[in-house]
Image (tube, rainbow, N blue to C red; front, side, top):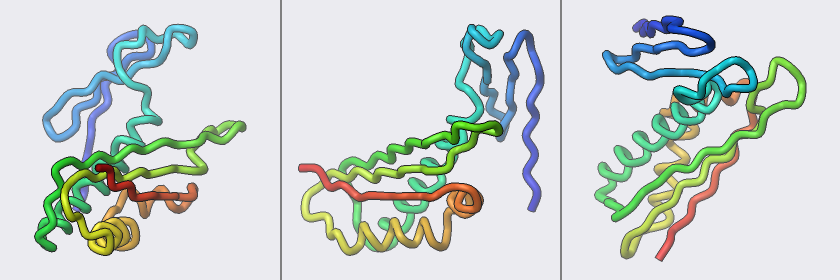
Length: 138
């Protein structure tokens, strides 16, 4: 299966990306020639990771008949100092809220996502250390 996205230069440092028939403007900050019209490309990698693993976890938990009242994936990355700058450490925080959430099932869902299903995690793992934690809030 092949997927294709189209990234068209619009002006300055801005590009319009078309992904699954949705348009996203990507731009740079002003001090490097952009107009800050949209997000930078590298953080969108973190968005992809959070979305990929988040969808996995919710799907797996659904099959386990576990439905949190709230679920959030917070992803942060630490960039290298030298060019080409890339995320060499990525931290994934899975935050759940709900009554009687079984920690063993939450852990299993996250582990399955990270070790088996999330293709974005698999790609990033080639260059970055992926570290995750699970938080259950009251």
